[in-house]
Image (cartoon, rainbow, N blue to C red):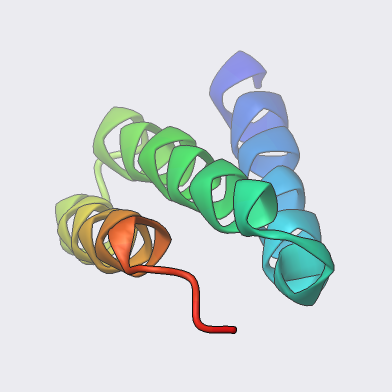
Length: 71
């Protein structure tokens, strides 16, 4: 039950940060953190493919965060 509650919180955080990405670059980094948290949930729950995909999304988000800001 604790893993399920953790998963709900992690995925909810990730989705909120995704929705907020246009508000600022910090939300892109927060989305990456949410992806890592969701990945941990995937591995804890035994859904390792979900865990792997979320790690990939975290990497993509970190790469987007590191891109220069266009003016």
